[in-house]
Image 1 (cartoon, rainbow, N blue to C red):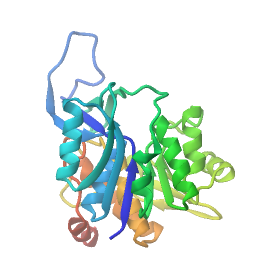
Image 2: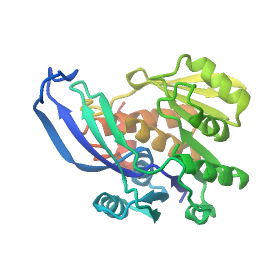
Image 3: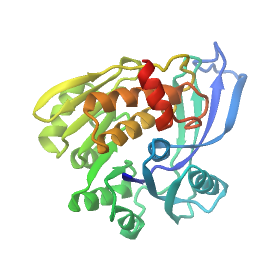
Image 4: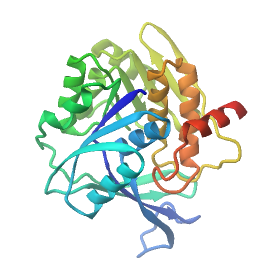
Length: 299
């Protein structure tokens, strides 16, 4: 069984589905909406849970609070088969309110909680690296040290730059220091230029730029880019895209470490992302390997 280690990025989401006509928000006092249940959210959670659903052994390492939100994270990860190593910090557990637009798009109100200059000892992540086939590093500041440690040990690494605009210096070490780099096209000035820069200044062998309903592009070092089309499982409708990118990343890397080709891993990742987005709530329903095999055969 392949083993993944996910470092950083665990927390909780509260998804609020806005009714038709409620977006953009007006200047009034309020509006009606459907408030969902508290769910396990943020970038690390989605990747970890999707990998676990697809049959990988998944370990996680992060900083949580000794608060109700932190215990939700601990309990839900254990229930869904992810082994967590965590240290506790007084600032608490990451949390977000997610406004879900009527078209399924979302707007985050993110509370990261932790001080930017937080120091975390390497024993949080080093034990999980001992037999890991792959390490995914979320772009929390302290996790850049875990990225360096994984690289020194020759372990396959990945990171997701989220909606990087190529200007924020916080992201740069992650962009240049991982083997596989994911990034949303949302704020990219030019995806081709971005990929070229990552290959020129970093170690990446693969750069994946995701474009939502327009699919994704897999840029390869010393080879032509590969277009990965968006796919929708039969009978599903997009209702909440929160966490879809994380499901894509988790499914793609699960396939890659199992020896799948880039087009095959991309196809299954697109199906996993769309499946996740066809349910309300962050990471509420993630496709299993059996379900993915069935859907893949039908599309």
